[in-house]
Amino acid sequence: MTTAMPRAATDLSPEQAEARERIYAAPLESLDPAKTDRFPTGEWQWVFERLRAEDPVHLTTEEHSEFGRYWSLTRWADIQAADTNHELFSADGLITLNRPEPVARTTSIFDGRELTEEEVQERQKAGIRSLLSMDPPDHEIHRGAVAEGVAPANLAALEPLIRERAGAILDGLPIGEEFDWVDKVSIELTAMTLATLFDYPQEKRRQLTYWSDVITTQAGPGQPAETQEEHDLAIRDFYMTMAELVGSRRSEEPRIDFMSLMAHSPHSVNFSEAELFGDSVVLLVGGNDTTRNTITGSVYFLSQNPEENAKLRANPKLIPSMVSETIRFQTPLTHMTRRTTQDVEIGGKVIPAGDRVVLWYVSGNRDDAKVQDADSYVIDRKNPRQHLSFGFGIHRCLGNKLAELQLRIIWEEMLVRFPEITVVGEPKRSHGHFVKGYDSMTVVIPRRN
Amino acid sequence: MNVTFTLQDQTSRTVEAEPGWKLMEVAVDNAIPGIDGDCGGEAACATCHVYVAPEWRDATGERTDLEQAMLASTFGVRENSRLSCQIETSEELDGLSVEVVGS
Image (cartoon, rainbow over all chains, first blue to last red; front, top):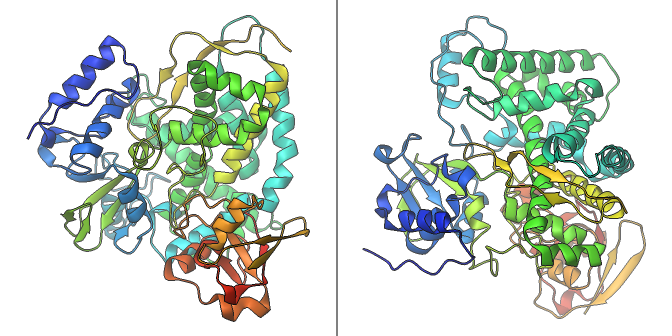
């Protein structure tokens, strides 16, 4: 079956138009939406545009993907239906499409000891276990152990601290010369918040972001960890540090940082090392590049959309709505995966029991059936809070209000200081299909208010 | 019918509502702070969490399964916690009183 290629929703460069034509000309069954190199180039948009129209519940078979056989859900309605049905769509096991560990290990990556046969099998099956990759009832135990760290009352207490830090970061930026926004602002603010949430020494905050960056990428040249040895060492370092923190906090008064909450949870003595590691990773990564990349995205999208920028500067009350629209448009985590517990009919197809299913939030957020003119960045939409970036159902992002808080504060502080921020050239986008973000973005602030 | 929302600052607002709407929608239409309704009323985001006044608990019914699962994963849950998107307004609920929890 061939379908005429529809007109593009937005203006495309000649290179983009050519890439889009290529995607529409490919045999449908060969489409592998997880192909990593389409994310930094932006070509992912047309893969999903085509799938939403022609094959919204799409099977990619082993021969077409390095990630093995998996199903893609691309429409908003199907994604929300799967995300809210944790009985049919289990999160137990891997929740991303990343390749399984290349080598079956027989020693612990955490402390180097010999693993039992049972543990080796567990590793091969699931890698790590965390609050994000568990079903009820374990899920509630693990989520419940740490949730208070980002509860509304505690966020209210964090607000003045975040505002003070945001102000100091912005006051220290150079005027009239180029600098990397990602490093100087986005990473700096979110790393400080992360250190507070873990009650980790502020002067060592970049250790947290380094670990997070290593964990979300494969080892290789140009990556945060250049070699597998460096990768493994960083993971071991992170785990040992977290295990030590939990251990030492058991003998201290309970506080509301994540490690103290974990230490004083009545259940945590029974957490396995894979679970302690998994929960720590989710808290680390969840609080790190998601907010970081959305901060960078907000500066980039506003520079690309001068009319929206003018609206915001004329009416700072639009900040919360701009923040939500940026979270939709950026979709800093592109997907989560689930596994069917039985044959499931969805979107007119039957997905057999035991298959992997990818919930492509990044595609659902561009679904015109749910979001009007979804490929456009519009900061004063009618329902800006309706987006899939936090997920729906029991695994919905725990820190979503903290993310919004940081975005809102940095923009309130930016608007009173800088009349303009100019993005120089194109940002360098992150590699990979899971974290959708920016490695660097050069900007100039011409003057202060 | 009328509904009274007690806000997080402990002030109250009474608003008029047509029967047949989700209580969350009534709150969003009246810009009640602390009720967001991000998922559109599917009991899937817990951003419309309220405490139902004791005298209204029977009339507002039982939690649904997904609502129960969501409440097990959210903050500040009490016996009288409900997601207001799972309560439908009706003449029988005229005078309903709930407290906004915030998320």
